[in-house]
Length: 359
Image 1 (cartoon, rainbow, N blue to C red):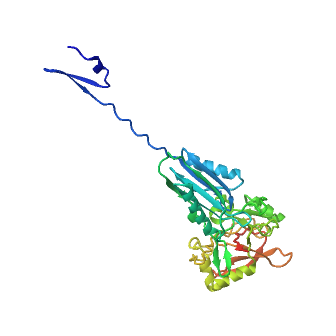
Image 2: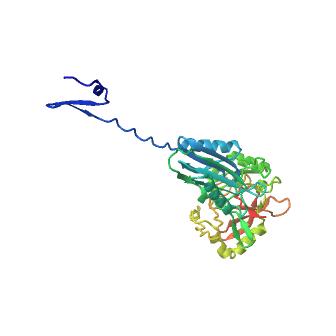
Image 3: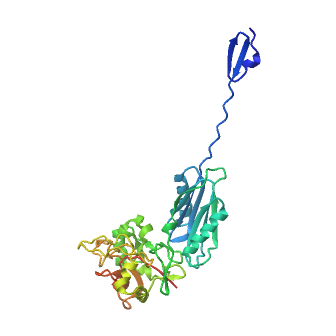
């Protein structure tokens, strides 16, 4: 019996002997499997208190690397940065900010093209800029051969814009800057000992609620009065720390002390009781101000060496007004025992939150 040599060279050969001869059954080579699209990751990090500090990453092999790269790029510019956007797949992210001489407002977006992403970024920025056009534009795109576009995290809902109450325009979050308007650093008191030092020496400074820097995203920073009134400027251009009279105007525009408190307070956190079983009660935030339980840091002279001993229910917001020239007391906004907003005075060494009003 002769076997054709060509048949022996087939990929898979089965020979069957029959009465009529030899039949060759050949198995075809398996088709090559399609190579799955590689998932690429991108991220955007910014300093939420100063939108000019930003960092992008794209075409990263995993989410952790994308976030790490974006934060690193942002921090290199000098910011205190956190992630505000992460995504995977084929697409682009865009970022817009307004000019620095106007203030700080920003927005971002993701889409299949940079033009579509930019349109979203502009729309988001305009929500927070009071109508000022955002001229500064940056973008990045993942490679075209990546997997389909997917949004993983987007902090846009966490970033709120200013609110108009009567004839005033107010910020709806606490101030969270670590530099003065001229770019110089504000002294950071990282612990109780350092806060006592700045209180004794009357050094302009800030700290975090409970000296925990993770509180800055939600509550912002607590500044002493010396930082509030420093000539280098705490507020960005176009804004200022309100006077005590501007606080009075705000309360009046919201219907007066009897009803304004509930409108000003946020909807969570105010039901926490103090050591006397007292709580202000949650608000309805109908004003849009969303005042939170950000606490206050007692200075060395009046804090008894325990900056946060009274808990978060004693939450204060500085005005720019002093009680009298040369006096050690200044005015701030808080809530009295009836949960009504009031403008009263306390030591300039106290660390209080800050809201801004538009010039």
